Amino acid sequence: MSDDAQRVAAAWGRIETWLSEHAAASADVLRPPAGEADIRAAEVAVGVELPGTLAAWYRIHDGFDEGHGSGILPSSMTMLPLVDLVDEYRKRTRDWEREAGILPFARTAGDTWSGWYVDARRGEPSYGHLGHWSVDGGDDLYPLGRGGWPLVEWLEEIAAALEEGRCLHRPDGMDERYDWPVLTGSQGLTWIDPRDPRVFPDGMIKLDRPRQGRQ
Image 1 (tube, rainbow, N blue to C red):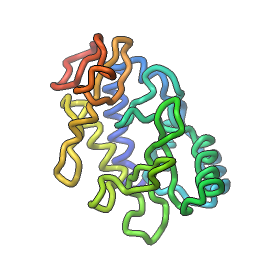
Image 2: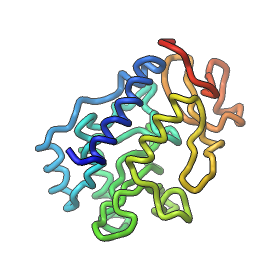
Image 3: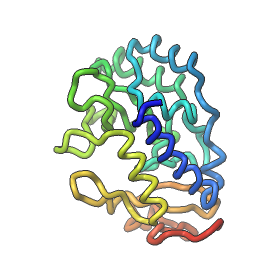
Image 4: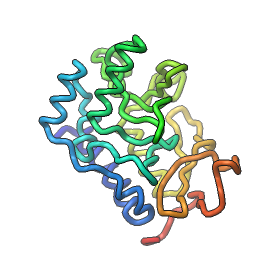
């Protein structure tokens, strides 16, 4: 296992431990691991090799099941099972005529409007980095102006944000204050703008400090 793959496993292990202790509904939507044959079949179907860090993540969980608590990733995104990644990629390259090599691994739960991608174009400076895609807005490395965020470092920052009870600290020095982790009244994790009362109803708990023990 490469160093980056070990870092992915360690970061996701921290996230999963936190979910098990504080967001049981979100822990319940994690799917079983993808096998090597599943990963290879997905690569053949899209004609693109998954970057090592993304493949390492799929070896832990083949995405999330949709439902309450599935918006585990920042911006309330859910990780796509490999079969849905393949479908999303085919739609992008065939129907939208988007550039090959941009792998959409996450999208808004219950929607197909926008999501996260990983750049799988070998030789590009942004290879293996995070980006945001949308139907009408195109594909942009995230955060804008920096050239992307390595997937493994993003996962490590998510783990730290949950453990410390805070928003993400982006690599460009900015804080994601408009996208904050919160717990629902039904033990699910999601990420919302806590300033907006329309999406922050009673019963939600903003994570503004570490949570102690199993709650």
